[in-house]
Image (cartoon, rainbow, N blue to C red; front, side, top):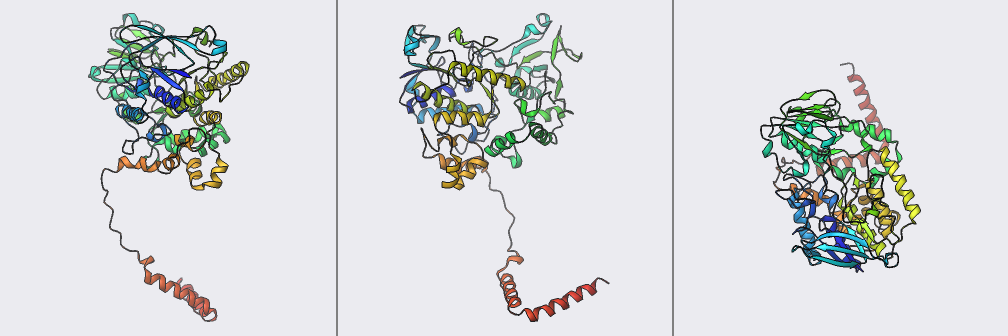
Length: 548
């Protein structure tokens, strides 16, 4: 079975490796000259390619976001700079010898069903190589790994007056660093993770920075109690069960109450309309402190432009604005795919379990990573690939079209209530796919056979290694990886020997005192008749002492 993999970012690399594991023949087409996709920093943005800013640090920790059979190096920081993550991808590609399957500087122009698709399930794919030459290929299946951060959404037409605005308006995909904002007055529109990061960074250089938000956000830092990674303490199977059993109102109240002592969201102008469980929180360590220092000012939604200023929905106007950065997300466009796959109300892709188009008579195409979740993306995409490859090979079957459409509509309605399109619940979604693949952990068997590991799996962080303990694709190192995951968390902190106070042996636990205590106890037990009068006498003395 020949499988076309579109893109050699983190998703594409995982798909190549899993295809090889399952005995399929992957051919990966990458439009650039290197692996990494989104995580390959470029000094200037390129059309139809994802782009990141220079200072970007991941907001999920290394143990939670790594590939399930390839832990990150122990000396990596728990939350790493984008350059280190790219280095990890290089280590992964070298270890599993993935580069030989990748055709660099090759762009996929079109993916179309063959005339006999209903029987063969095959695809005609047209590519253009670095020399501009067009090539045609036939594949048995397709894994789309090009991501959905390539077509920026820049809603300038929604804001009257932008044509005559004297400042600069641009999308966050063009932002690289804050050098151009030094000494200027800047408005950042949007309070997603990119908006929070960019606003904080600009506020260190600009004269004044305004962060405009339509709804507000709940803000969480990367650190939990004792400075440990937040996601490793929060994303556990035990917590997942608690959240599902307890009323949402109670869980929201408890978590929001835990966040407010560090930063009163109402006081700081951050408090959103939605409850915490309804939408992804903003992961940012510095935003509240920048507000506290006056370098960053929270503002309501942008209403329009006025010559050199901007007006907000509460009627306030800020004059002499030099730049407006729109952190307003991306359109999930896949122009090379057949238009018939985009059946959604707004011509967006319609996908069963955010993965398979239900309209195909043969399930031989899957779109990776087109979802949002409160947790790391990479382990989910890796599991998506494991499931998709099983479907391609005929080892896992999808429901009928009607059933898939019913599930899609049900999940769409649920996500509308939660203000989040394409939202999936991290552990339940992983477990569902793992069930299809045959790798979901059997907790009863684990409890009986390996109770130590069971405790780590159930009460500890839901790290990707759990899905390599048994079943197809089992990894012999999975158990040890789980048992040593906290050691790898601690490793990067071990850069200085911390002096400990000299410990003197406690008098209470000295051998002589323990021996004496034991002797007295034995003597008391052997001579009850003699000891009781002594105790009574001591009691009388203490009673008499009350008068003094």
